[in-house]
Image (cartoon, rainbow, N blue to C red; front, side, top):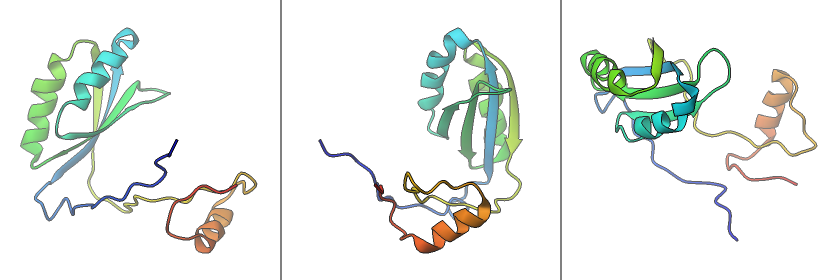
Length: 133
């Protein structure tokens, strides 16, 4: 069995493509409907991540729209029609300070317990994500 450990993708410049409204939307939901809600959210073309989370919220999604008006319409029309969503909080991205799409997989013997250790590990690693050990 071959495992897909690395996937090569092209990453567009979202701002150059005209997308101006980037947000995270956190939701409290009826937990018995969490799978149905995630399935519905996953079908929307402007939703690019759907995560079930622990803590104050149940689901957090990442969305990207051409304008704030379209984001507002999504919240008012689309989210309000999904049964089981009790409460939402929208976190509008004002400025992206870091955007990374790769990470290093530490070996089982390399416990990363501090930023200093992580920086050292990153400097010593190749840019290709691969399993160690």
